[in-house]
Amino acid sequence: MANDRPVRIAIVGLGFGAEFIPIFQAHPHAEMYGICRRNPDELKSCGEKYGIPARYTDFRDVLNDPNVDAVHINSPIPDHGWMSIEALKAGKHVACTVPMGTSIEELHAICEAQRASGKVYMMMETVVYSREYLFVKDLSDKGELGRLQFVRGSHQQDMDGWPGYWPGLPPMWYATHCVSPCLAIVSQPGKPAHAEAVACFGSGRIREEMIPKYGSPFAIETATFSIRDSDICAEVTRSLFDTARQYRESFDAYGSKKSFEWQQVEDEQPVIHTKSTPEHPVAEPDIPKRVKVPDFAHRLPGPIQKFTQPAAIQDADHLSFLQGCGHGGSHPHLAHNFIEAVRGNQAAFPDAPTSANWTAVGICAHQSALQKGIRIDIPRF
Image (tube, rainbow, N blue to C red):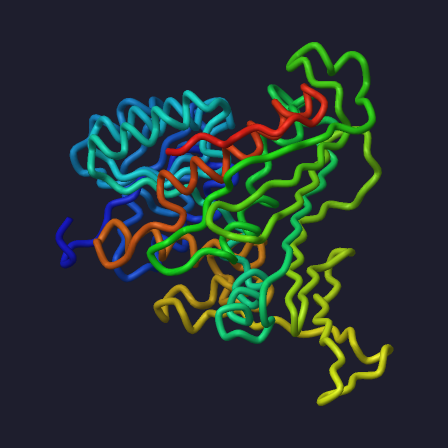
């Protein structure tokens, strides 16, 4: 689309999705045009709170509105696939929260719809825009880690009590938060890294009443996957039920000169380990050092830089708690990357094939776990 007109955005799903409303409203090249929610009372409340004129209770009404350039989908996981496909077929650019879909067939269909439409598709994966990830990626790109040797991701969450489709969900079906940084850090401009093959083992057992819904008994799934055209492999761990663990999104990158380890406990600062050498000896107690991670707000347009910070230190007159700054300050970076991709100024990251690959790692990993850890090749998209 032309670069001189703001991108008109419609947000679908106003739970988590509402956090992006003030960001799009403040972005100099976006227009927060419309919102969609099935519940008319909640739709009206949100629309009046933020002064949004276009409101829809039916997703297809969003697609039929010629004024909508792009949709940002924040619906429940089972709706991601079909909504993305229909939006692309309707000629809309698509940003969709994770995961991209729940089957390999669905991932292929989204990629095919994106190619046929020529529109932007971007999976809004928060971790690869979080301040911690941006920090370690910057270190890696500058060569400060030395030769990258191994990467590890972990996403553990207690989902007990969550409604609907969540109880019994296979851990790896929602694995992009731990898979994505392992692949993104290996990626180069114009050459995103893709996983090649995966092997996964399930461990433990969830409560019997949850098992039949998806036929998945595992409390924890741990996978190792190879990366195409790379000598690096990655390990990821995921848990959802019947496992005692504080919420964690964690990523470690081990290099020949320095290694980075994300937090073990919430609000801890990450750790840099520096290798001791004869030329630059480091005493064993001094090898690990906690580091303060910057927010990388300088990469964003001025009006949305404030959204990298917690609401408590924003100009919060019209913001509710955490709005705009969640997931390690990633939300404004995600919104900006998507807007710039729609405007034709840069590629979406992750684009449709990369989003499919990141999502397919988890889907194929679960298939491997059900077959006692056999290697499964990940399809090309």
